[in-house]
Amino acid sequence: MPVWSLAIIPVAIGFLWLLFRTKQSHKRQQSTLSSEYFKGLNYLLNDEQGKALDVFVKLVESNWDTIDMQFTLGKIYRKNGEMDKAIKIHQGLIARPSLPERYRSKILQELGYDYLGAGWFDRAEGLFKEVLIQDQKSAEARHNLILIYQQEKDWFKAIDIAVDLFSENPTVIGPMIAQYYCELAEINSTKGDISQLQNNANKALRYDASCVRATVLLADQEKVAGDDKKAIKLYEGIEKQDAESMILVIDSLLECYENLAAQDKLYDYLVALQDRHENLFLQNVIASVLEKSQGKQPAIDYLSNKIKRQPSLAGMQKLISYKQKEVDADEIFSDLTTALSVMQKDSVEYRCQKCGFSTNTHYWLCPSCNNWGSVKPSVVELDQ
Image 1 (tube, rainbow, N blue to C red):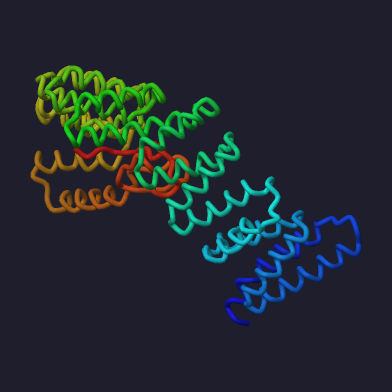
Image 2 (cartoon, rainbow, N blue to C red):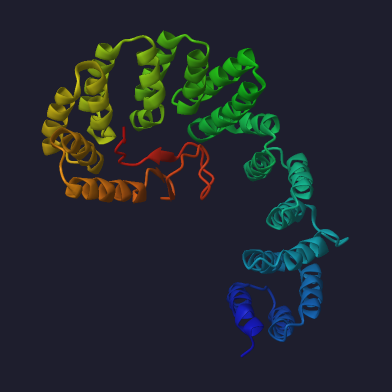
């Protein structure tokens, strides 16, 4: 059997299923419709797409109650990546002079999806806007416009549309708007527009008080400006927003404390943070701080005790490196250190909480499911 015949089987099955569910008021009409459907299906099975389309378009014009059949066919084509065929179906429907007004918005929506799938964002945008003219409350059209503006990185337009949806679902839309303001703040940072950066980051926090990215932007700016105390306060505040995200700012936090020559305060803070959140695995960071402030032996003692209660590859690797230097051990220690280092590099550092996407690079927008702020540090062992 030809490959195209296998591909068309789901189309035929879908149409047959809908055919048998269709209820007609008169048997004669039902017989006529069935005959036309089977004629169209026969064209499909023989890969005569143009003839099949003509049959189905004429059929729907004679009985608009069968329009769901056309929508189903269009969705099947779209799902299979055959956007040109889906577009032809919906363009054919929208062009019919007898089109009932009640179906116009739905057809425009489907045609918009076709254009989105084909990557024609400008055409899709125009159609979804037309849908909103006819149905101002269409949340579906607004969400699709947001997706388009997000793809085009037109953050102002994305915000304008999202704000209209905020009151309906603030827990979902709020974090989205916050991320759009953060995108603008990133642009402000590149241009050196500090005032506008702070303005956009604070707007982000108004829409989502737990927006870690906005806090990081504000803290990084204070750090660059040389105000390490303000930066530390902001960095440490991330713990209340999302404790796991402290991993993202540990290095910056260490640098700020070192600039203030406050190693003792840093040690106390890190120990307390580790006690509150054991899954952060901060023992290597704490050991490095101890080594700088008190010497190598206190760091070794700390690590030796810690990994007994909370074993970790990074901790073992760090301890072995200390022991190797301390006793001038043979190549076994070196091999163990190398092996542990390789094991760590193979581990996953970040994982999307929505779809499970794994990566060793942090993203604010998940490349897999396009959810904002869902990529979080997994069980991370920091190497210092």
